[in-house]
Image 1 (cartoon, one colour):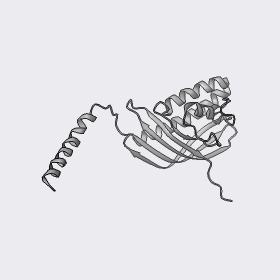
Image 2: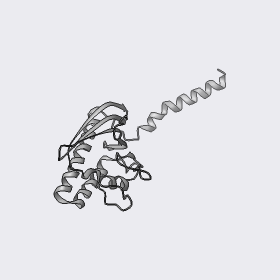
Image 3: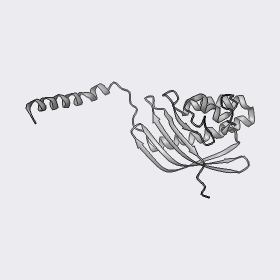
Amino acid sequence: MTPRSIVAAGALFAAVAAAPAAWASTTYTGALTEAEVLSAQKAWGDALVAIAREHEAHGHAKAKALAVQVLDKAYGYNLGPVLFKPTLTVSPQTFRTTKEGALAYFVGGDAKYPNDKGFALQGWRSVEIRNAAIQIHGDTASTVGNVIMTDKDGKVTVVDKSWSFKKTDDGAIRIVAHHSSLPYAAK
């Protein structure tokens, strides 16, 4: 190293060493835990059942109001677009990066999304989540596995599901990516 590069390296080291002091002003609630991820997944499943039951007991308007609350609490639409690919969507509306699109998928009734019949209104009674793996990296986590849903007639639907979660500065756990598809059936 030349004397000039030693001085430059020293300045770079000093800047990096000082960086944590600047980061200290950022509120950080800590890393996600596996227990928090599992809790967020369970809450999602419980919410799906609650929306179905609300629809049956009190109609579409009440189910829609509950779905809005669920989207506000569970998903990160307040952070930016959510990378949401619902199970039963088709082009040109396959992906639902906005809260409006997600709401239409879950409860239907939106003329802008004419193919949506209300996935959450299908009479769900139980949801079981079987993760194949969970990766946690600081305040984010990703999962992949199956979600097994049973309706009021006992019919079981299994979907392949990938989720990404982010723990926000206020400690909330938000879904920021959600991909769901029916399992591949070889012919």
